[in-house]
Image 1 (tube, rainbow, N blue to C red):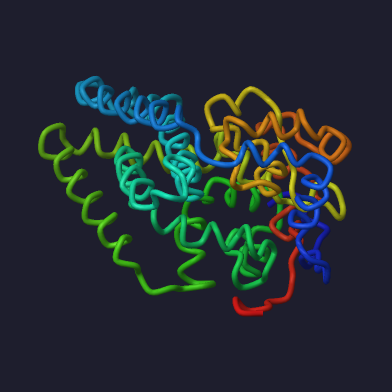
Image 2: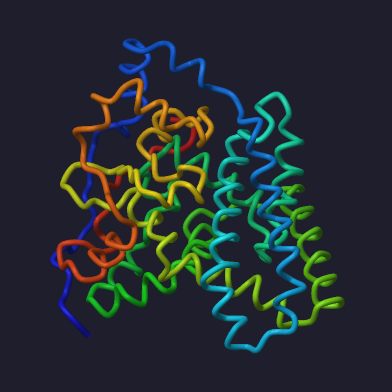
Length: 321
């Protein structure tokens, strides 16, 4: 089964999450960062091009062998779909059309969601904004692994399977840890997605539908672009709970690697997050950071000091506290 991880519990802290206080310090010194707040007018064109690329690939995939289908799903379609999931992340922060046009953001989220195959745009927003506000909260922050996950996947082999199964944990963990009644827009998201899936199956066949969904799932698991799931908040250095990555995979993930910058300034579009770091380098250059998402996956699986327990956690405060 491999080496047992050395941690037997999460890293509990009684301090507030670090981003609100750092945001205040940075803005006091560099108030010009506020000029970066808003939305990215280029974003909708980039995300739309990704969706249309997947639509075009449907015509290519339908005539391929199953071997080629799965290869394309892992190496191409899954990467595009993962980028579209991160487009939905941008949309969750209203960075496609701005806070003044919330419905435009939601409708564009439905569009970006189509090639992913699974309705997630609205549900993701519902939980993700709480992850920002209540980072590390044992109940509210559903980005945290459960005790069951940490206990079951506590060896090298176990962590390997945990990484492979990440998409299932991201889908079902919120429903178990912090269930919420479905919103009207979630139902609309689901109906639109099911209708699109039915159209794809009718005109292109099940092989193409499997290409879309399997690509989404594979690229959330043991895949280089999925390294950000672990790199963002798993405690590779004691006491630090958020980590940035400044490598080339940011080019296809809307700069999600600039994760300290994003949590400090969630109102700044991904394209402009490098500007935050350029303006205030002393706040980011000297804290732990990652240089490779692939290396993050390797270290997470093989290092006995790191595992699902390697997260900073806070006692639940409740939404109204």
